[in-house]
Length: 70
Image 1 (cartoon, rainbow, N blue to C red):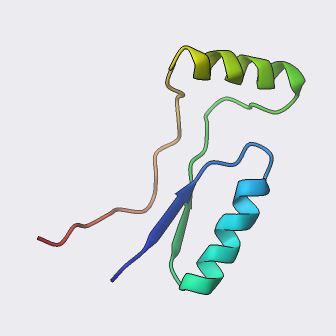
Image 2: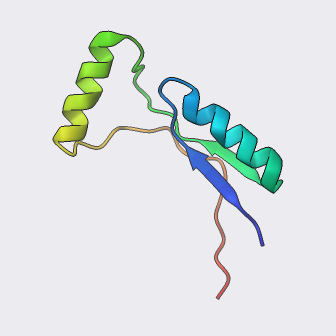
Image 3: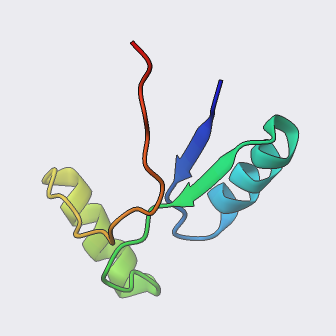
């Protein structure tokens, strides 16, 4: 069974957890990257407003391809 952990981490806390899981599960890791820089307090508020409005973010293309087994 192949496992892929995909994560988004604004403050790098989630990234630390994802890396620990990767080490324990011996699996692939893929970071979801927003094309716009969301660092800083103003960007935090903008991110909050986008989340409340369910406005999607523009993310970079992922590198890992998931294959399903039927």
